[in-house]
Image 1 (cartoon, rainbow, N blue to C red):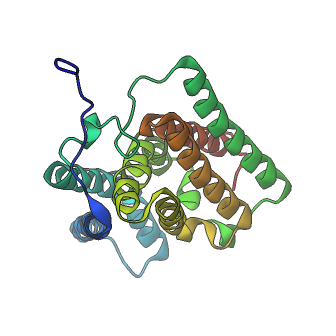
Image 2 (cartoon, rainbow, N blue to C red):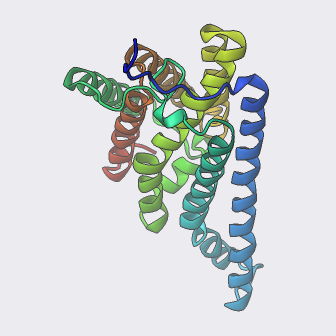
Length: 255
């Protein structure tokens, strides 16, 4: 109908470019991590850190925790933004089933998404209380979260504010769009779930409750993303889950 406003649709991405985006974002994350380590080592040398002294070496490594958490994810987010700008420039305004979706969630959708995240987090924390992990079963991030200090504070910022929007836009957003355009929703959903769980492998492979929690989180975020046709609901669920887990660490109920 003449004068009718048509929904914005982002250009086709496809599986090939989605895999290219996956590889480039991973390279960006690795690059920024390496840069942080190199700069940290130069600073340690300038401060005359004795690398043969285990205590000094541990302190030097711990001083890099905060920048190692913050800088790589910010660099990865920047890489994702520029790649999306180049390949799917209108994706954020795409209200279709493979776009960002609705930016206005109903109160019910907000409550359901946040409630699901909290529920998954609480169930995981209950499992942890009955089957606490040994120190050897804790992943790198869990070890940081278990120790008070700047590293844990940086992890809290990343877990609650940075990781949820980045990972949901990346996995349940643009990657899901690219895979779904080439293979359909079911294969795309399976693949992004496998990739998401795989990206947390160092945190979960020695402790099955953590693996179960991450798999449940992956399935729940995909479900609400599809149900609400909005990545925003997945971000909210993810952030709610991470908030519960971080609160548990601060209360000494984990690790």
